[in-house]
Length: 225
Image (cartoon, rainbow, N blue to C red; front, side, top):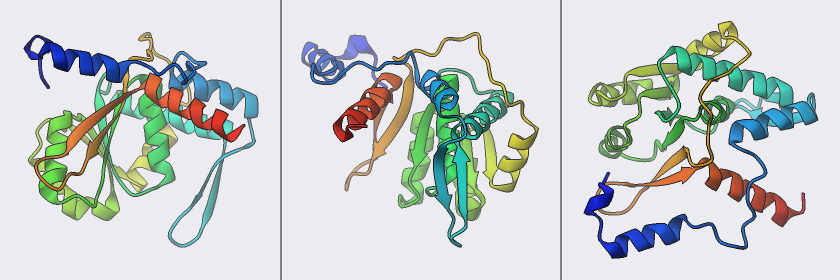
């Protein structure tokens, strides 16, 4: 991170231009991603929200209301592990329904998700975890043998939640209702996506809740949904 008073005037102008929302992108209709999910759950209730197929081809379907319940439970699990609004959490996983739940749970509570690509080498994964200052990592058991030594070298990662058995058990006993006195804002960080260049360390690109909602709305409008 670079202090703002150390930036040149040219760099400040570039940052301001990058943060400005283009006029052709409409503003989000919600105060935050959690509000969007809550409203959709109330509106669509038992209609299918997410369908997941595992490697064996087993199909799992999540209704809107059930998905929102799992997200709320996951947010409560993260809160029990010390995560608060503004904190960053890493997901070390392949595409999985659990990962989608973890993303939305973080956004519900105003935390930021740092996806970790397993295609990166160990040095880059260590750099991403350390540079992002992630406090908690969700780790699928499939990759535990490889990732555990890396996590031990990153002291900023204070907690590790192993998926899937541990994660499923923690969800089952967590409260299905999540509430917080802290208001989640559109300016809150939602994602830090690290680019994988051919030279040097990965570079983190920060997306806010506003960015994520604006892109989602733009895609919906483009598809005419």
